[in-house]
Amino acid sequence: MEKQIIEYPCQWSFRIIGAEEALIRCAVEKYMKKAAYQLTASNVSSSGKYISINLETIVLTEDIRNKIYLDLKNMTCVKMVL
Image (cartoon, rainbow, N blue to C red; front, top):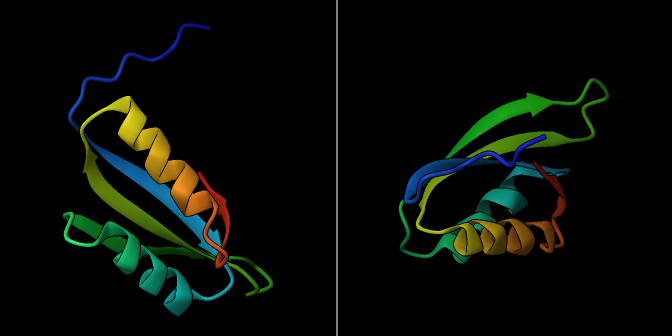
């Protein structure tokens, strides 16, 4: 399978999954600081235990995109990032 070619800068969407929406929103707000981004509620698990939020932002390079992914993944309130 060939690696997808992505032209930067581009808009990128991260799906963030966790237990408490307010904690995720607060953590993302602190992390993104003055960068332009949009957060939108996505799904709630069938048990209601987990929620997902979409984070959309402009990424300038693949390195920056990967850094954002890893930083989000390492937040204590985040269970998974897609």
